[in-house]
Length: 238
Image 1 (spheres, helix red, strand yellow):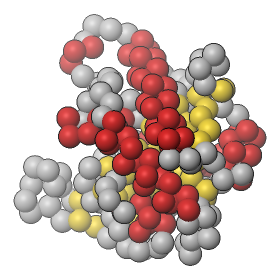
Image 2 (image 1 turned 180 degrees about the horizontal axis):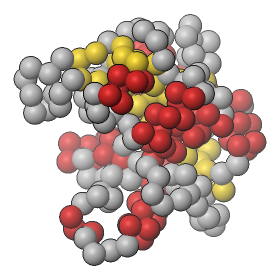
Image 3 (image 1 turned 180 degrees about the vertical axis):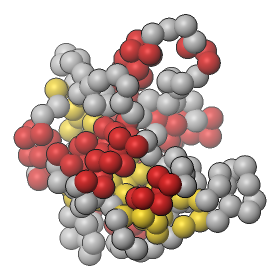
Image 4 (image 1 turned 60 degrees about the vertical axis):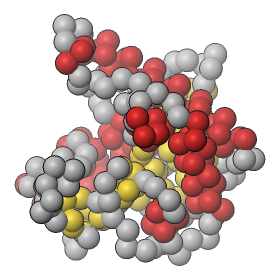
């Protein structure tokens, strides 16, 4: 068992499955993610993964102007279903047991989500993949990850991104951006750092679930689970 966590929820963007282009599904990128999850699972941590759909569809893109927000969000939820199927197959290819659940009803393809079924799958050691967001429009996959963290009593919510933590400015645009090693929920809100949406933050704060933001590459996931200081930890007090 890892020193620090018994159960975590990992939120990864759909773009993580898209490889260098951050679009579509890149086989090498998906395989690398599966290897990372398999290594983390080997440490004894119970792992749930909420996958976004940004590699297929960006919900706030100008290209969807004129379409109903509800319809665009439903398209995004369906995109996450495609992503978890790809990730499940990559996990099975390396003999890692994986179970998938969807918050939207596509039961001919994915099992419907229930807390009891997801908890049982985690306890038997499966990597559990969650699709469909919360099952409702107007809620992001960040909110879905926070909700699953609360429902399944995770020790932490890990957000894997393409940057190595939370900064005072966008590090992809500013060479003087400074990274926080740890920061309070309230400071993130007051500084408008846009790490996650406010609904997700409120759920984690109210339920005492720390959020760790880190760069999803190499062995960083395993390092976080070993308790190493990787990325930025968001919590009530620092």
